[in-house]
Length: 116
Image (cartoon, rainbow, N blue to C red):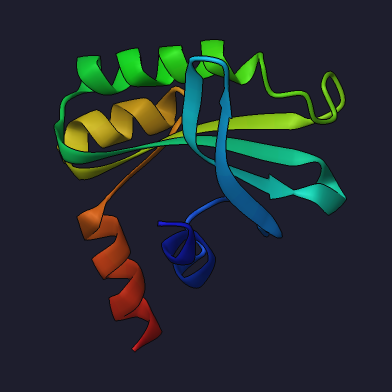
């Protein structure tokens, strides 16, 4: 998945480091860093269809877990993203209007179509 983040430029900032993170029993699928601008995106990946409520629960849990990530704490801009097989357009729009990053397979396919 990290290759997709780089290749398709799915985040609102230039990513120069990306990887998974865990501490004790907490785990985050991916954390993407834009170190020059001190930006950090916490990402959960789910290979299933998500509705608004389920995506919001995932994002809320991601926010909680992000508190354990000690990099530029208090001096960085945090973003929270969910990547899923499918998210209904209305649900995606609602999540985005609330400041989250919501991406599904169709978004990736549309990015590829733009490149051609």
